[in-house]
Length: 116
Image (cartoon, rainbow, N blue to C red; front, side, top):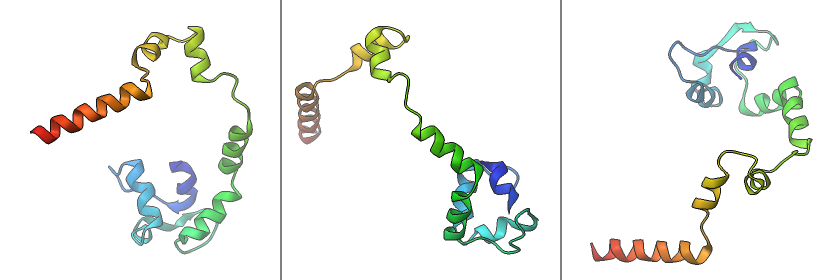
């Protein structure tokens, strides 16, 4: 992700976490982290949020994500857990909650909080 935005001219400051960096790009503060000299697409100015979206729709990472989403899953977690093929199958059975039990638990918590 960072590499993709670096090619668009957005360089994260040292010590900035990736999530904060991604949020900064689409804000007005994105201008502060934009560097025209690193923009391999020769835009020369910071991209707007809509321009970034259009740019992403024509990129290889976008195509890779779409391809992955269209590929059918071989196994679902539920099927694997029921078959015992994965290690947390026991945890799946232990922690599953039925709706009646869940409602009773929520009601008892509400009553306890109300009494306090």
